[in-house]
Length: 161
Ligand code: THU
Image 1 (cartoon, rainbow, N blue to C red):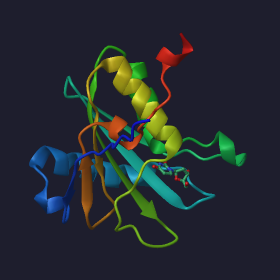
Image 2: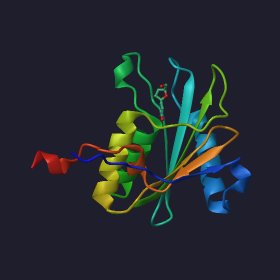
Image 3: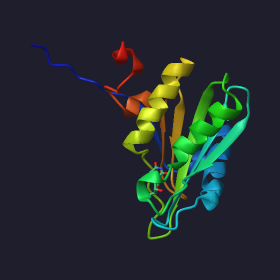
Image 4: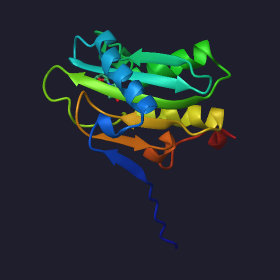
């Protein structure tokens, strides 16, 4: 028997003004792209903007459906778009933000479990970490250096043999 401890480091910024210019720009894009969300059911509009290794920018927003489980999160829309347009190019960083039409938008967003699994797959595929910048429309911003840190014990294709 052996007990194990898993920890990870992340950075908390007081607000967007503490970020470097490139990261602040990306988070601003993510905030802007929340307006492209189609979220008539939850009224929770999410934007995710990826910066690729070649400098290209790919945006995604959540796209809901009257059949609720059909809806897509912003992160997975951005991942799918990036892989479709630039299949050979790694994603360097994704900024994620949201506009909660029902309430407050000042806490950093935290990607859902399905998106964490999707991010883990892309990280494994590209063999490069994906930084995540997680914010709201204002307030604190959290940066994690690799998406996989958010999903310890992620399921992976290796297990399929
Ligand atoms: N959503 C995202 O797009 N990303 C997240 O990180 C959290 C949740 C979406 C799914 C749904 O359309 C709405 O936000 C409320 O859950």
